[in-house]
Image 1 (cartoon, rainbow, N blue to C red):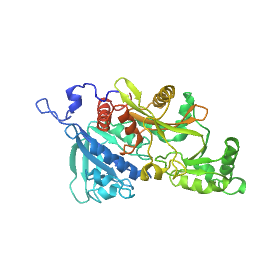
Image 2 (image 1 turned 180 degrees about the horizontal axis):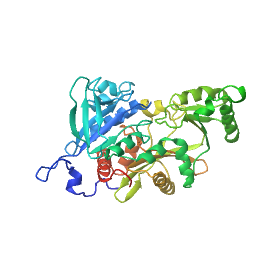
Image 3 (image 1 turned 90 degrees about the horizontal axis):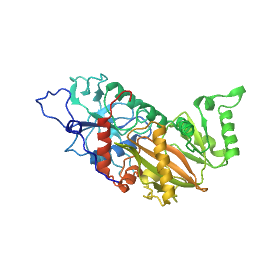
Length: 403
């Protein structure tokens, strides 16, 4: 697969300042890389953004790093990817690289202006200029779930990746599975426990008793072990493998630390297969798939295995040509079913009877040096740098609003 981008008009490729007249020169597009955020995936977002900042072609783009702190403040940060990496098992944060503990960044919500303003207490606000496109490297709620995308739609600023609806559906595993089912895509057994179900104590019983019984009934039908996870989380955070009813309360408490709504899934025995989807000028295409082999030091592919101990995936996955074609077809179908744009990583199980079952999609997959999405595209002929550039160029071409 070719890694070269198709020719584009000079004005669109180079960027044109909205306030410049015909006699003024074109300028490079300014890319705001937004990362961090209020979710439990804050640190992974910082790591991901560091890798992207390291790879953006500075001869082609101006770059403005904007970090969102864990309490939601938008901050100017150092453009220093080295300080944004995992070092000696220590996770980075926006607070560590913010240029000020008090200053904040504000995007205009006037669709006729793309100005970014920086202000500090007691100082005159400083206009930092226009932003042409946002690369939102946020993971989890308050960023990957359609909230940031909605703000950017109001602001009229193009952005990389899925729109409001697709981002929201891609974040909520319950509704993601409902959409997949409606499009005929195969999903595994699951049950949802909403906040009210866990907190209620019907007929004077103990809180959560009915929800606990619902899960036990689900296990009686589909078997133990079960996986208890946040319904709107990612990066394998808050997930617990439960072997019997005695472990349910602790697993539910852990999942609810990340999300009051939880998802319970049965164990699907088989191989874990991933496939990337990238939007080209002629539509979405699938990468070569990858396989996540069993991790011997961990009970499953959890956060520690994925990011700290760097469990290695097999790229490409050792599949038959027929299996490869099928998982690629399903990955593109999942992209289309959820109305995604830009990119998606689709995760599957290849069951023991040879059937693919889709587990979930990730509308903003990790871009860390060890992340599977860029590795799959590297093997498909698209380098990391070309992948980042293609995503930015696709966002610059795409209008905001209804489309």
